Length: 388
Ligand SMILES: [Zn+2]
Image (spheres, rainbow, N blue to C red):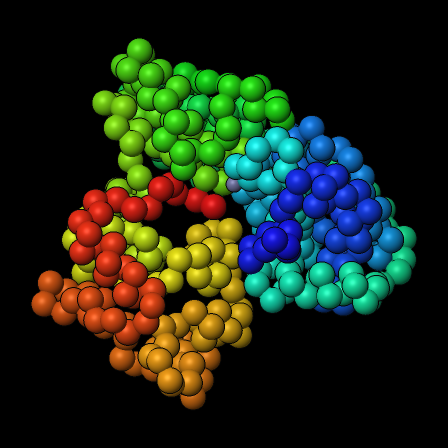
């Protein structure tokens, strides 16, 4: 399988992902960034043992295009996204293999404030094969992003008083340990940390909270300490698993119910976007304001803020056109809420959900059908975790 995937580049170091290839990826991405007008980009990395050598190779490629690099250091992936909004950069690269075992590494790529995905990632491979590279000589500077982020949390959530909350945080020896416990303490929480030390060998358990076995330590600790909630991060801390005070796992759609209730209190009637794997529990609770989208729609997932507000209308149009449900035999049509109001705009499928208009039960496309089969099987919860 190609290491150039839908949303990132990822493979086994020295087998799929060599130092030479890492440099070429830097060169191909850097050339793309230069052509898009970027002068500098941010580069972060996680704590894997291969991170230093991957960083060196990537930087060689980027600098060789004439791009300046702002090295934001070892940090969670969401802090790379934070850097895109707070530093004078035209894109960013995170060196990480997310929740995968220690022998893996890879790259999450952003241009402007959006993630590269789909055809944009595949075309990097084509550029490498053709040797379509820009040339120049950039410079490296360092900017520690974690203090910026913690200061932002302190200011933005100054009104939050969570003093009564005791939280167990399992950092899994990944990036969560650098930011998660301190962020929660800033909110006033009492924090019991597990495996906070960064260790790219992941000696305690794999940093993948979608696997129930990896949640056993946080479940046990919540029981021992009588904590109110437990949180387990994945390797680059852009995904969480959560358990309640009884140690019961709160899967992603139940977390969405909690978040949505909170949002709807402040913004009644707000549209809540979920992934397609969310169960009936979610739709029954929040249903009046929801529409169903395909899983991992880039209109949602490529935005670091979790909304589509940072994407350009043309990008959103492209994403929606591509992922909108298509009745068999008909040409693709765009979403009725496409901001470009293009000729392919359609109006049939996003009927607001009410108890009397269960439009999603109609088999209009394969993903709608699969959603229906999930709910008809009585799946209470099919969405493993929040995040990516
Ligand atoms: Zn991740």
